[in-house]
Length: 120
Picture 1: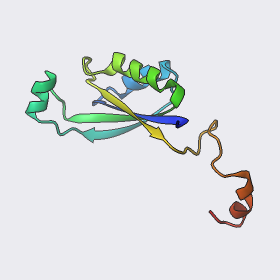
Picture 2: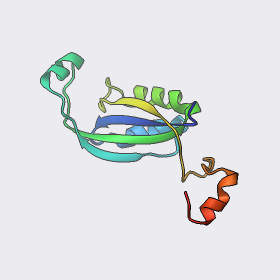
Picture 3: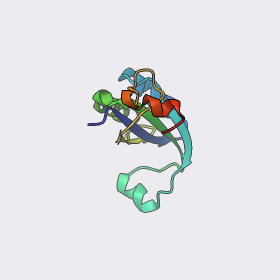
Picture 4: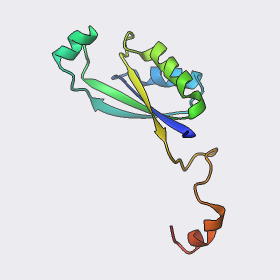
């Protein structure tokens, strides 16, 4: 089982703060917002029963796997399809992480000599 999961939440433009507020309340530390444009057609609008705004924001949130479900539930409650944000969220397992203060180092202790020599 992966130690971390990445959650992607796609919402209407202007709702990324709502997403991050909900995620933080569930234990997430922060996220990254990317601007995007949706390509849904009229059939999708009829299927979901909503008007689809083309301008989107994608919020990418890296969380410990143990809180993933809680964060997803919070996103659904606060920014899901039945809200103004009309968000969808999904998660993917993350194999390796570097750069986080509480993430384990990826290099083995026995591999220090290769690191010192500039090896991989």
